Image: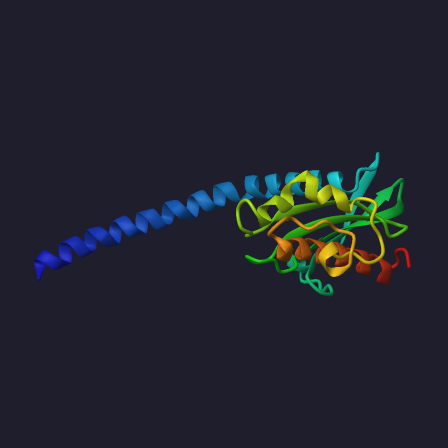
Length: 186
């Protein structure tokens, strides 16, 4: 019996110390991670809405308990000198391997100013090419209905990654629709 109790006690102590250390590391790194995530988001917002002097103000965020239509998780208003000049919308449509987090800038006239794929679980070498400028830059200047060419639209899909291309197009369309329905261009 003593042969089991002693090793079990040692294992319990080791596990408790490891759990305590993990808790400490989690607390120590929580704020630096949040700061880095905010910087990364601000940089992406500046890329999708490249206007001098623009400031962003969050108007809806599902992580704060807000309800937004479709797969949209966050909407920020883009302002210059206090005047609304557009929005940055983050949507998470379903791709081949899961959600494709897409950030889209839309100006007050309902034209896409930029698009970036923030994160995805798509196939490396295929759907992962959605993060390549040769794909996402084609969205800038688009308005109206956004669809891939295979579906009669104007977005050139990534070869062998039509599902991913459709997901990014759906995210862009959701952003345009939200802006149109919530005070932007009609």
